[in-house]
Image 1 (cartoon, rainbow, N blue to C red):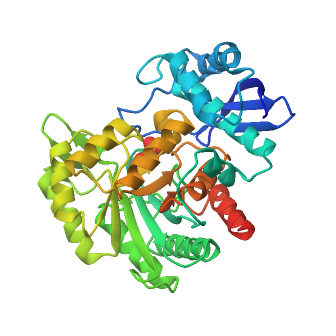
Image 2 (image 1 turned 30 degrees about the horizontal axis):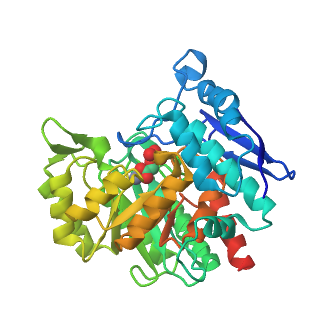
Length: 416
Ligand code: PGA
Ligand code: ZN
């Protein structure tokens, strides 16, 4: 039984050049684990609190308060604890914080320790991280099934200077192996780049490494993606599908209860948003819509699910924020049929596992996700494999902080 000898955190940069927390845990048998945290831009308002310094350095985005909470508060409380008992570790930190949304110590402080210790304990147990997580949480899953990737090849919204309103246009390669899925994704990504160039569009990229052309309309993105699938030699629908993350809370006007689509010069009610998705469902190989409606628009989420839930995957991201309280209500009221899982929305590995288990029990699909601000940390690839997640969402086929997750999945596939 390895015990926690020390935990230490420091400030590093994420893929957008903003500070984030990296932590290292050392166990008394010499095992070490390091974890680096991501950070969102279109964050849900119900997420656990990411503690920022709000001081002059880094335009207020410094994380030295969170770092100091790890080094001077959490470190003392967890020293000597059994590194294999991740539930007890997380419960201890949750109690130490004592708030509903981890606002005292910061979800970033707590999660960095939760993940660094999990890594160190996996090293100590001489197990790959995915196998260790599966064993630690005694998951009732058998065999390994690698997640299907949702690859964000066209970025909009808050991740791309509002070139289009919808935040993410993703391709979903349906081949049998991860290696083939990655190849399919990359070939379509390059075909899309060439198509954009030929048509005179900008081929600069957004925060998640997808193209960010100013298209003058949201539907133009759907057409271009289907064309690039064909150009790359893949059958739309049969070999590769489309998933959307409009991240609609970002363009929802709560006062007028309208969705403001600037690229389309239209302002839509929830009913008309639902009609729009329904129309696209008939025209394009669309299989999944995430945050298609705003994070607190419960009545319309229920309506959307009633109408389209049998034909379309409806994913709650800002809507559920990896929080079992919100998920439980969604299940009870029949809102959505899938959940996006982001570790830093809730702030510990154990609570993340609880959300996954609850989703599974209710037959909600599970999608493990990165954030728009990332690091080279690949823990989400291991987490997806540990729980046999249905999907993983980790950005485009460019930029190392995105691609490394695919590379880790290829590595795991070889290992298995
Ligand atoms: P975020 O966006 O990481 O900027 O919150 C990702 C998403 O909405 O899925
Ligand atoms: Zn989202």
